[in-house]
Amino acid sequence: MATLTKVSPYRSGPPRFGNRPHNIDTSVKTYQLTPEQLERLRAGENLDDILKEAKEMEQQKPKVIAYTKYEEVVAERDELKKQLEKLKANIGADGDKCEQLKREADHRKELFEEAMTENERLHKEILALENEIQRLKELVNELRERKDRSEEGWADATRELRALRLYALQKLQKDVYES
Image 1 (cartoon, rainbow, N blue to C red):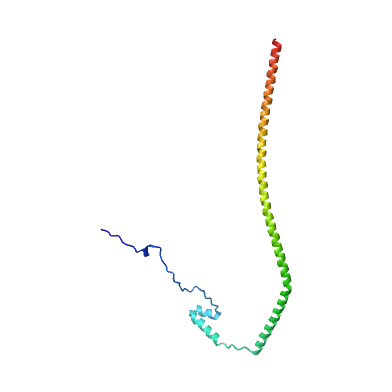
Image 2: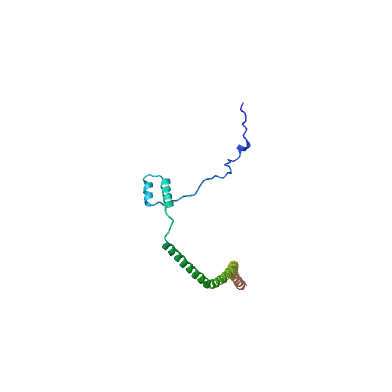
């Protein structure tokens, strides 16, 4: 006889993948190779060896610059400082213009908001007037139908009156000529 297999409640739920962080490096490293290094890489040399050599060469370069070069850099720095001061002075003069432009922008924003409010009000008014026009068109159609029915009734009454007059005339002639 078959026996029932018991399944642990732990195994009967959805799959569990755990909640530990996975330390996977997803960064992308890019290298800029010189044409000579690129040729060596294409020749089959290992990239790590090429980069290690380039790093060693960088470390071997002397970090000393000539005094004349130092003076040029200092002169350039001083020139840049002067330009920065001039720009700061110009910004101070332009600050008033900037404030004026901000006030004008605020004013225009207020005007825009007023115009949008007025536009919304006019849109509602247009809808109300369109509804009124539709109601009046329906009333006009109803009145036309009533007028058409009245005209038909009048035409019927006119025909009936004409027939009654002819009948009365014949009756009168018959009474007058027969008596």
